[in-house]
Image 1: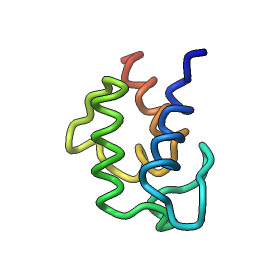
Image 2 (image 1 turned 45 degrees about the horizontal axis):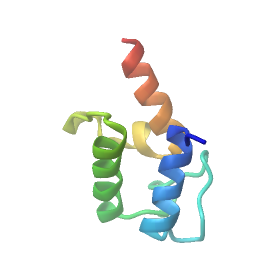
Image 3 (image 1 turned 90 degrees about the horizontal axis):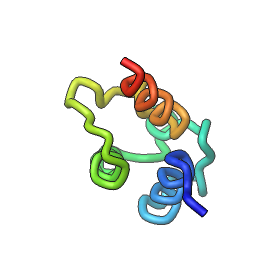
Image 4 (image 1 turned 120 degrees about the vertical axis):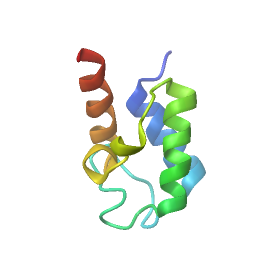
Length: 82
């Protein structure tokens, strides 16, 4: 069974980044709620770029695009449609 992008990102975060407050769900705030720090952000961006093949420019790495797994997937899907 192939994992969706959402499932892959959630698994990566919960297994590798040890978010504060326990496991995260797809709509949980990652950064504004302090669940991940700036090092976690770098690791998350690296994972998304390498594992999922989604290129992110520096100016795209902002809270609105990355504050939850759902926001990350929605942003990537929006970029693909553009």
